[in-house]
Image (cartoon, rainbow, N blue to C red; front, side, top):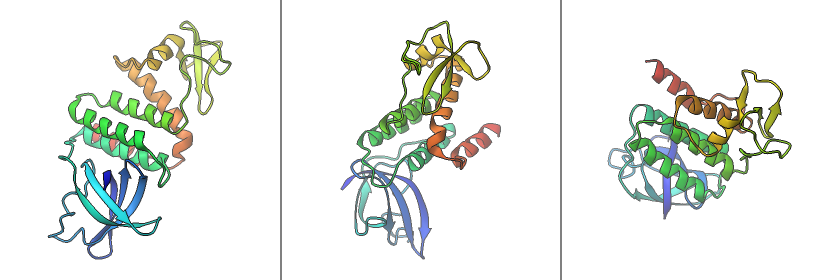
Length: 229
């Protein structure tokens, strides 16, 4: 068996579930959990998001059958904004990765992010760090210290972020630009005020957009609704 988390689950036939797992060794893939919806099934209560598991499956590569699953620890307690943030992490992993893509480091970062969400009063720094980690692990990271001409970012200059390209120096400041001193702080992951957090959020959204596609993230919509209530 290997460490796993449930990313999502769907009812299947009369009493089963299709469960999308994130595992440490095999990455993300789907399994059929036969009988998991039955009242007496030992899997009914544990095949839930944010619950550390040990799981084993076998069968077809595209849809395996779950044969063993047990708790590896207590469910990570996420409530309110932390809960919606957890669903956002799940959706990022689903949208940015391919089935059976080895993701050992992503798995570890994901678990650490969930623990941080559960223990921190501020979710935004945790989300921004995980977004950046995902970009780097998938080969989409960019340079915070040099522009697209390989010149050092200068604190007094202004830069525009171009997805899949990096930072381009511009002669005049505009609404969509970032000051060099801000970029250097963000590159050092200094997110100690609201202005820096907002700048990092803008850049991460631009950086992730080419890989997320046109379909809106459902978790972002839920997050926005929760904030408005």
